[in-house]
Image (cartoon, rainbow, N blue to C red; front, side, top):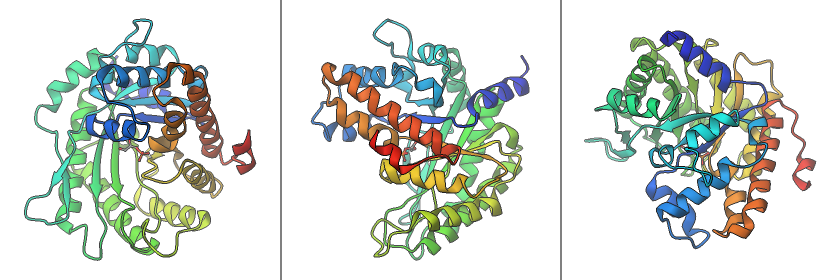
Length: 339
Ligand code: 13P
């Protein structure tokens, strides 16, 4: 298959009405932080057992079309000896890989950050692809204050995201482009909207300059909402209206799918907000989820590292996947939370 057909086939498998992605690509330090909340050591076997639990959840493929894995997980095997990428594919879930190497302070720009990992990326893709990865993810992070992010940070991160996306498409791997405007801080929803608009505008400008084919990417943005420490928290209706307005201003309709990150929202909030946005349709793109914490918190808390809790944990994951699937269609009903 030529590269364009390969990219299109992957997009078609990932972007389906009522389906979203499971972000299970926590890096070593991040998964250690999550395990700490249940008092569990982050050993290689515990990480494997946890990812095994998530990926062997019966019926997950009905609501989830793709899973983002961390490099270590891509090379690990399920209890029955099947490598995780093959196991996912067998369940109708496209396996993908987080390829950025995390963020560091942006030099000479106090408070701003930049994501690393471009050097050697084309070579790494050869191995990832051999292991079964069909899409990739790169996360850029923007801190908000009255003066941040700087123009420099907005431009430098857009350029890195676009370089990554171009390298990814050349390798026949669909890039998920993830610019995350953080919800930490006491900023208003208006400030979040202003920053998100500037960030997305620059990202699409850079994607164009780097010749990235928009039909073969997915955008993974943050929702537009007031900072977590702001006195007045945003309503579901406000978040939906602000987010959709900014996306309409900045994201070309050639982009097939937008899959949100949850970014620290509670599972219920993340579901309600996605649902409210889809009720504002018709929209030019498929609007769905690529949640990490908002899908995994309930199963992680149910599991607590005990084999005897695996079934309950899988039920908790399936419930969130099912409710987010409904939200991706604009058909979520909060009463369903009780079932
Ligand atoms: P959250 O949904 O927990 O923000 O994670 C999504 C993700 O992939 C962050 O890079």
